Amino acid sequence: MITIKHDGCILCVGCSSVCPTNAIELIGTRMEHFPEKCIDCGICVRTCPANVIEMHPKKKSEKGADKK
Image 1 (cartoon, rainbow, N blue to C red):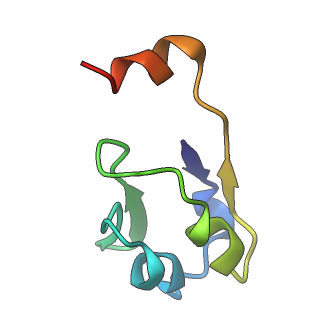
Image 2: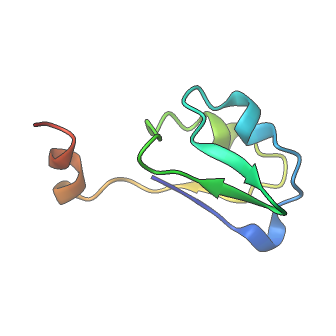
């Protein structure tokens, strides 16, 4: 799971352009993250020039939720 620190985001849309699942989109004047689309690959984190995207490990209860 990722978080975006919106106050430091420069709206370059680099994260959105590299996301393989389109889990980040520019909505109005802010980048929005859609966790249900995110595959936790971390490409957006490495691409962000402002370093405002952080990866957080899923909690144990969230890891099992994907397997049904």
